[in-house]
Each structure stands twice: as structure tokens, then as C-alpha cells.
Image (tube, rainbow, N blue to C red; front, side, top):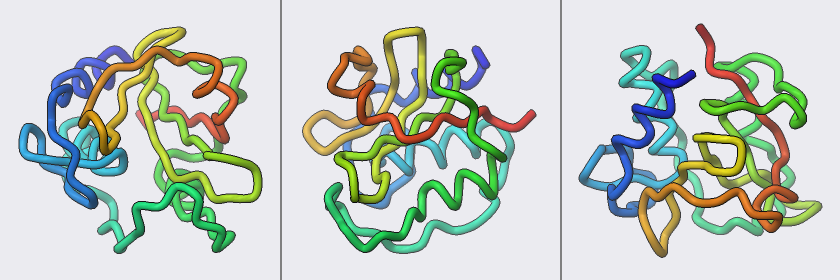
Length: 139
């Protein structure tokens, strides 16, 4: 999955823009994943529906998880996660997973968030305990 990491690193520095997915112009965490998908596979498999910014939405719908299942297949055990894997984060129990990142190493991941845009961050315990699912990119 080194190609996924290389593509994602090419997005570092892209400013944060909610619901956007344009390298060097603006994206959010889903937009980063959508952009990596386009660079790796071509056309996106489906259009992203409108979605809110709030990580703590309690509507109970796991939209990111359902989309990951449709396009990535079943999740892999957290113990086997590796560079290039897609990681879904849940802010707290009882809320839907609302953040995505791409592992870039054993203890690092690339993601986009409002305060910083696309960055490569350490996968510190505070992030690690929020991992809900891990997916491998399809071949």
C-alpha cells in the first residue's frame, strides 16, 4: 500500500474545506479519501451525500462505515493494521464514526481536520482508542 501513502502525502498542506475534495484547493477527511481513490482508481464509485461537520452527531447512522463496507469490503482486525489502511474514528461511544485517516506507518496517519488541513499526525493513544474500524484498499 505504499502507493496509497505516497498519494495521501501528496495532499499534505491542502487547506480544510468542509465537503470539498480538491488537492491543494481544499478538502475534509472524506474529501482526502475521495481524492486518493480518484488518483488510484479513477472515477469515484458514488457521489458523497451532504453531511454535517459535527463529530458528536447522535443520529445512529453509520454512513462512513456503510460506505466503507460497500467499497472496501469487510474491515480487518485492528491488530493487523498497516501503512495504507483506511481508519475510521469514533469520537466517543454512542456516536457514529465521523473521521477518516490513512495510516502512513505503525504510529502515524494522514488526515484532514479543520484546524490544520491535511497533515500527517502521530497515532497517539488519544487517536488510537478512537479507532472504530480499519479497512484495506481494494486491489
